Image 1 (cartoon, rainbow, N blue to C red):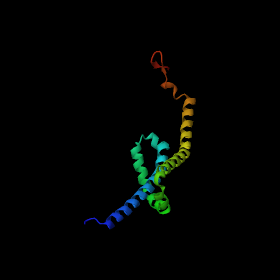
Image 2: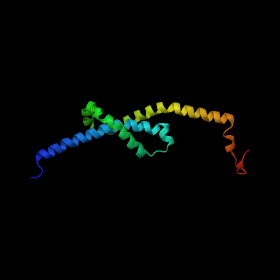
Image 3: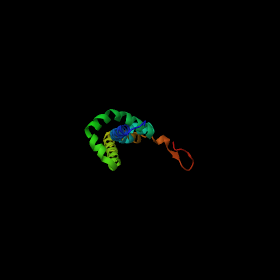
Amino acid sequence: MIFDEVFFNELAILSDFLKAWSTSLMFAAGRIFGFFIIFPMFLSLKVGRSLLFGVSIALGLPLAGPLYAEYGEMIEAAGRFELVYLVHEAIVGLVVGLVFAVPFWMVAMAGVMIDVQRGATQSTGTDDALHDQKT
């Protein structure tokens, strides 16, 4: 026989290892992806979600090894709760992104308020009746 029982046992071990390692990669990338979703720099660039997910996987790749070394047995035993843990990591990333995004939003709002006070937005108004500028 070409394939014997030892081959299939080694294949099962490799499959379990790859599943646990890819799950730890998704855990590492989930938090980064949650951060990328809400951070203003990525919102203003109109970057696609698939590109953000690819970048978050690339940034999570160095973290996947230590994460697997620390929590490998827990990840392998997670079973059906993997999705819950992934959503948890994404929510943590959203909260971290929100904390980092609030100062940017405050500065942007201060700029809008200054523009309104000095009348910079008044020239963009149009007269609805005549479809013409108000100036």
